[in-house]
Length: 365
Image: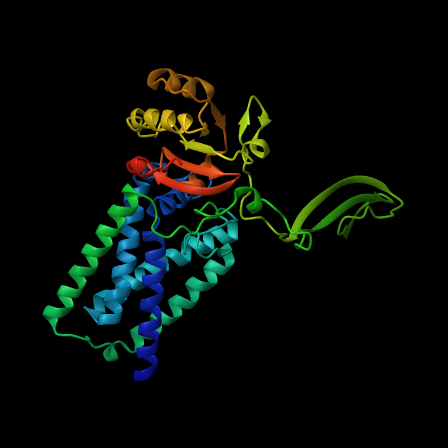
């Protein structure tokens, strides 16, 4: 039992640290996921949406600290009850998402590891069982160091987590797990391989035969039935291949210019997913950056989900000499965790990506 508890203790602790670190690396992305949970139609808690980023930072730091506390044996009773409370809450959340198909990705491991709702729920159930095992054998969870050293270790962990969160919030994630990381080609990311698995659907065809309703299920073919057709219901039973980059368009007046813009040898994208939430002061600096890029032969475009009235007002206010295009808000949030942010591309390949606090780092050869 002692060795079992020792193994489970290390396993659960490391899992909490890894899960927390991945989200701590991208707290803005986790806040978007929390906003999805808080939205109407899911938990319907819109009062928490303005505080999603703050909540995300607090939750992920606590997650990392609980993993550390479990491994070093700091206040085992408090640590176990805290772990139990957190995992019970997340188990409920993932079950709710899976059963009602509300949120298709829980964000447990950010963009690093994508889990389906039922996979997330299964993971949480396993963790719940392991934590209950730790409760049974809590007498074997002994501190690894003296009390003073334990406290110093914990304080150091709090400082490290806080400093890391501060850095990624004011710059960009240290590790980019998304398909728009530097070095990736956007057009290649949209390509579907010829041998990629295709989605499989069940078609439930409803007919009236001799006065009775009859349902025949096929996987696409129209059935040969001597009766009156009433309707058909479609159910996806197997997902097909989804390319890493999807729902990517660069539209203007209803026309998509993505294919021609992604072959530009020198392209700068100024991305602001929602101008109402943008740091508008950054556009004062962006004006100079855009002018410098254009003098170096770069084509500069703006990309936003905001309407033409807002983008035109922004152009007029800051004297911006480039046009804005429409792109889906979720896509823009995925591309860069900064509002605004800037990308430099060569024929669709991302060469540079910066937060608005790091505009001076941009190079236009």
